[in-house]
Length: 204
Image (tube, rainbow, N blue to C red; front, side, top):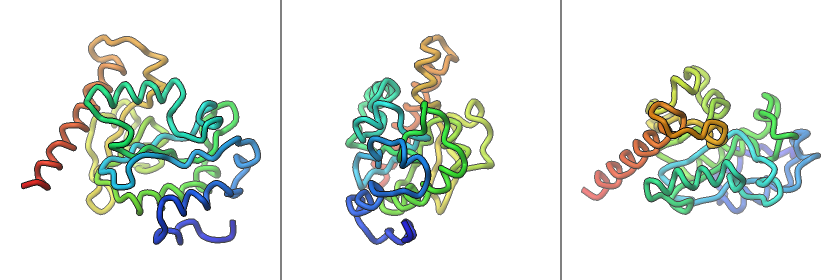
């Protein structure tokens, strides 16, 4: 693609999607089945960002619909949030082979699309899922075990809030106090509290 993806800031998300599905900016385009653009409310106050699609996502073209996605749905439902209430996407839009972590070149090639999505959605809160997404968007952040559960002041007044990636919860399913799952339940409650307070403030 010779055109700068960021020049699409004046487009709609659907128009940007049309550009992304034909992207061949990196080698991930050679092994993908489907581009996984993202989905949710275009007016969402909260944007969830993961690192990249997995196998089920690659097959369906939808973000977070495999085992980790079902866990994310469970986390959202625990505070009465639905996918339609937020927006969900990833740094890279094509599956890295073997579900490996995307490398820097792949993320650099695809990041302009995420930047365009953020510019169009204009979220007030970005929830990063896992260490890769957190470090990419805020390189100065500590590791995810220290960063999670903290509201960081980010770009232009946007808040950034790291959480564990849902796949991490699948590897450590314990609900014991202090476990990743227990901490994630506390974290999503903070997101819900922030959202409720924001809604109340706008209604006042």
